[in-house]
Image 1 (cartoon, helix red, strand yellow):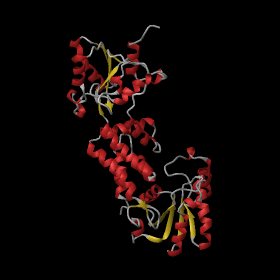
Image 2 (cartoon, chains in turn brown, cyan):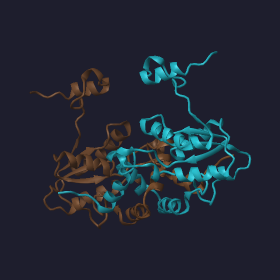
Image 3 (cartoon, chains in turn yellow, purple):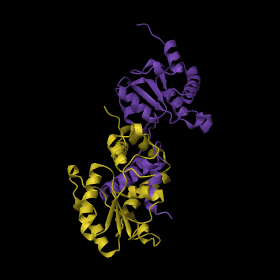
Image 4 (cartoon, one colour):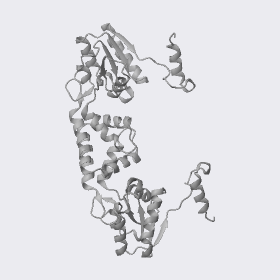
Length: 199
Length: 199
C-alpha cells in the first residue's frame, strides 16, 4: 500500500522532469516549497506564469526578452558589424560575462542534430540570413559548442553565408586556462598544438 | 550595463533559494521552464499552488496529508502499539521504503537546535504527548537523525516520556551496510564495537 499524497507527488514529478534533477532532489525541492509561507509560494507560482507569459524571442537576434527587441540589440554602444552566433541564451550570458565582446548576438535555439531529428529549419538560421540582408555586418563569429553537433551547425551556416562575402570566424580550440595538460584529451591537445601562437 | 530580463531573473532567484541549488542549476531550471509548452508551465505553476493549499499536517501524527487524518493513521492493518518518532516526512518515507516497520509514526517537523533558536515548543512534542494519553502505545522508537541535534531531541523526548512507563528505543548505531570499515569515522566505529552482536 502506498501512502503518497497526490498533490505532493504531482509537484515532485514536475521538479523531476527538470534537467539534472533526480528523484531525491525533486523530493527535497517539493518539501521546500511546502515549507514556504503562503505568500512566497504564491509568488513562486506567479513567477513561473509571468516568465512564461512575458518572455519571448527578440525580433532581431532571437535572444529571450520581455520587450519587442532585446536590450543588447537596442544598445547603441554595441558594434553592429560583428554578430556572434550562439546555441542558446545561456551561452550568450557566458560570453557577456567575459566583457570581451561588444558586438551583437544571434541565438540559434539549438543545433543541427539528425539523431534528435533537429534540422536547420528548426533553428533561427533564416532569421540570421534575413538580418544580414539589412545590416552592415563585417564578421560572424561562430560560437556554437565544441561538440560534433555544434561543429556541424557552424560548418553548415558558414557554407550558407559564404556567398555573402562576410568574414566568418570560429572560437579558438585549445587547452582551457587553468587546466593541466596531463589531463587534456588528445583531440583538444592536438587542436591546441595545431593552433599554437608565437609568443 | 546588464542585459537581464527581470521576469527571468525573478524565476532564477526563486529556484536559487531552494536547498542544494546553485546559481547555474537555477538558471538551467528557469530556462527549462521557459522551454515548456504553455499548458505544462501552467500545470507546474498550478501544482505549486495546489500542493501548498491542499497539503497540511495530519491531526494525529503530524505527517503531511491532504485529508484530515493521513493514510498511515487510518490504515487499520498497522500496529498501533508502536510509534516511530521522526524529524520530517522524508525520513518517514525512507523508513516506509524498508517495508520493515508496520507501526505508526510521529513527525516532529524539526529538531531541538539552540543555535537556530528552535526549542522543543516549536516541534510537535505536545501533540505526541497528547496522543500517548489516548492510545495504547507500548513502544516509542526514536528515529531522529544521528546528529548532535537529533540525539539531543531523542534524549529530551525520552526523558519526558519516562514517567509514562512506555518502552523507548533508539535506532542502532553502527557501520552502514556496504561501507568499508577503513573509511568509517571513529565515532561510528566505536559505536559499532560497543553495540556488537553475537553471531
